Length: 115
Image 1 (cartoon, rainbow, N blue to C red):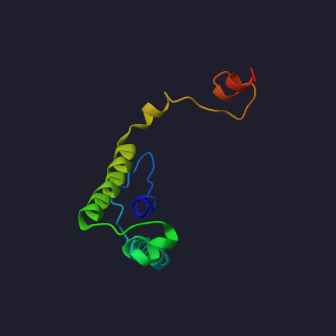
Image 2: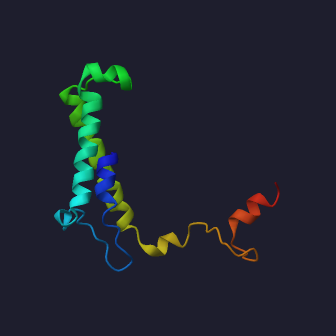
Image 3: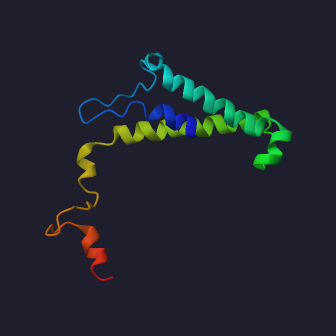
């Protein structure tokens, strides 16, 4: 999930443009690709060999477990797409923590004023 989240966070988008294509221009930033491949190799190294598993207290994964982990990671892409599809009007319903002490909608001051 960490590797998929790394790719997800490349394109955040905004209120007007949602930026659903997270792979657009991925080849333009070579440092990103190098770090992604290094992290992928380190994670596979940690779980791929039983002799290394002694150090990290891991066991090698079967192919079915690796496929399951892949699809769970892909699920984070679906969650990110759902978050991007959420209308900005809905976020107005979320409680806000304001920096101004005189703000009436500041939940933080209401919660911590009794402490």
